[in-house]
Length: 113
Image (tube, rainbow, N blue to C red; front, top):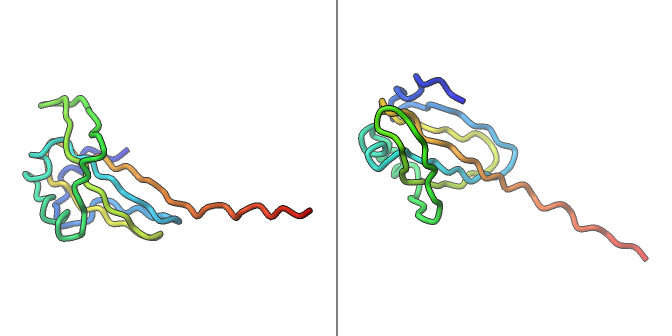
């Protein structure tokens, strides 16, 4: 969970840093189309290679003042390491973050007869 004050982080600044040990696909679920445009997120999404992912269904969240909310999902894959997420600069709140980890496959069992 994050402080509700995170919603005020400018789109030009890092809001959250995630450190992973495995390659990771990050899904950012915005509250609405307006949520993407009003705070300036669209600029950093495009500049940093995020893509609109229409194959993922949005969460539906209640909320004040204009809920329920449902919006676009943007996706990007990263190697293991630091992932920087910029601010949404929007009074309605931050986006949701979902992580899809891609750990290496376990080694194949070596069967000896």
